[in-house]
Image (cartoon, rainbow, N blue to C red; front, side):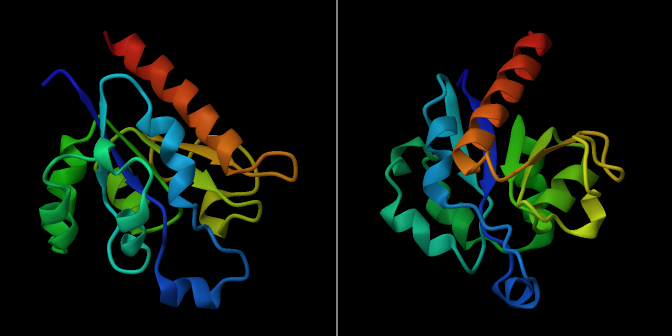
Length: 162
């Protein structure tokens, strides 16, 4: 009631990660800045590898009350429905980013220093999804700094909607 819903995903496929030189995985605790937003609940979109991190999460109380049931859901059409309920999605370079982008859900994609070819080498707009914002790590900018940028972006965009 009156709260914004932000979907998050922090780990990609373990199989894909073994094939890539640079991991796009984000430490779950980096999302603490987002979890502290006023009038926000988090919804984990994480499936499989990485989902176990929810058990040790410092801000587990900020997730929706039905997170346990959501975590057990793996059907793509249900993932799509969950994303459509979100006011925003913040994630790594993984399946939920493409699903959220394809559904035109406002999404922030946090990219590692060497992002996959599909996101280009520079810029903040996705060539594939108009509602997807790209934030890129660099030598001087880590996950915490990107999360602060994501927070600023979300606050600007959501306040503009009011």
